[in-house]
Length: 239
Length: 268
Image (cartoon, rainbow over all chains, first blue to last red; front, side):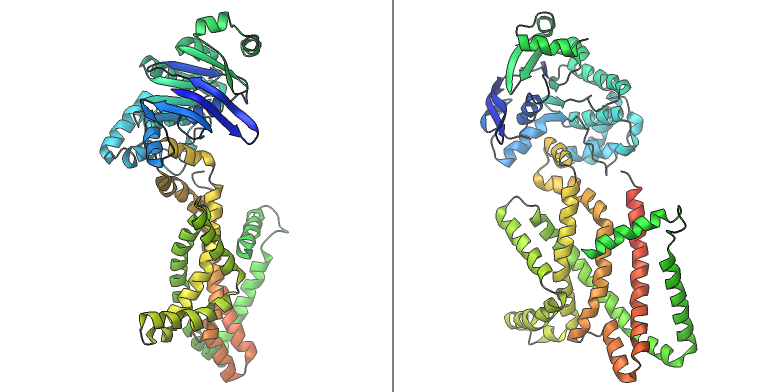
């Protein structure tokens, strides 16, 4: 749950008093033009950006500036980045096991067992010993998803997970995300993949200029948007 | 730092080597010829041979002091380099002060300072009855390490700052603490990236260890000086000293080049 989130970068108001509640098990899509504050909003959820004003409560825990609190909350919030951000000096397996061991305190065997299970789940078990640079973009992003899932997060945040991928790799990443959605994972997704929005999302949020313009379930949202601004935007991205 | 820049242009030239004839390393060929002439002189001339055996005594100490001082500087430099990227204003200020002071003072002055200020002071405080003062080896290590820690700190800082912000964001988003992020994600990548620069600073330090002859440490240059004073054949004496330093630093720069090639063709 987020309440009255405001974030400024210098004079620019990136987020203007935004309220948003994500329900358990829900898949929430955030769309909007670039610079509308959607990524900033997502990054505020785990305090990669610290809001200037407002409260963020995750699973009953309010985020504050104490680092112990933030580290703890972040371990419960998985994040997938546009540019994957795998650790290039570690193998795929090490990428997935490192945080499990040093944050969750799991043993090496336990962490590896979970990592291999997840690699199986995202469809690349044979890549465990490879380094990130040896993988395609789609494979890297699937490893990044596995890395986040290994922490057994309560919520997953996706920051434009497919926009750095070649078209033919987008599907393999979206398929993994669809599986996750079907399993009931709570997800907040910043993306313009409208196919995914139709197939998996429960609610769609449209943002512009740091505010939420419109929010609704995908059926209504696509067929009958309420605001002129939403209509104009949708006409540009739906062909 | 000139050492870094030098290495950059040198390796660029190395890459062009196989492509163009005009870019061939003629300097290396000339150097080799000079080496052969020197070797021949050493083998054929008795005074040269005796100078070499006499002066070469210092090599061991030159290498020992350089390695010891470099090991200390690597650790001290890392700590100060971490201070230079710290968000804590006090730590940042202290680290920056150290770097600016040490880089602003000539190494020779730092060496005299260590010999005549720091060591006597340590003796006083710890009441070792001047035992440390007499140990010029430790003085030399401290002076070189303190001076070079500042340069190495800047190398580390550059390395740390060259790691993309997304890397630490990814680590933090997994719940890692600031320290864990540094220890497991940022530093391993940063150190790998600056390995050639660190190696070049070792070569620079090895050459600068010649300054220690000024406080009577019996390293390579010291023996050169005494030999020259004894024989009055300045050309021969300093030729031999320069020859020995050249061999050491050229061998080491080959090692650095090898490391450079390995890291650049590595996992990135």
